[in-house]
Length: 194
Image (cartoon, rainbow, N blue to C red):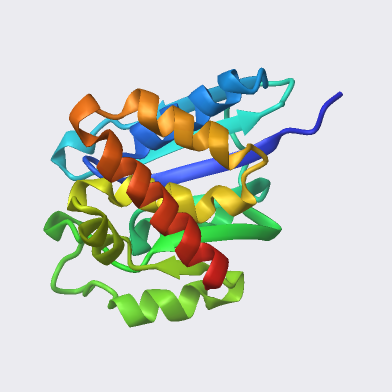
């Protein structure tokens, strides 16, 4: 039996979690690797939570059991905290340093946590925190934040960077290929020096 490498990608609807999981799946296919995936995005269009499970080289089902994810990739600080229980001891966490806060989640009696409070709670996981908004803007489009974060996480993914980049180029809209390729490389460079 082959041990799978389990990646949980989380974010808010519209942040590109599904595209990121599709990029991972395509990179697996390019390398001839076995991959299984599942996604949940019921209220995603209304700013709800989105999670995608990717299992590389696994034999069994697509869902990751809490406490077993090798890598948690989060496009939002609050979502990183919400799904942190999925990360195994010694696992890796790559997180966008910002958060989108749906106002319907909190009431006057339960104020929203600040970014600094969330970062303090995540500190025990020693996360790679990345300002994906800023890097994506430098790459040429704020819409490439998901690819920036994927680039930052690429060092921890058991796939070749060339395969991931080829998958990015294949799956993003044709007119955004250059920007997204640059975003991937910039995210990868950030993570290497962080």
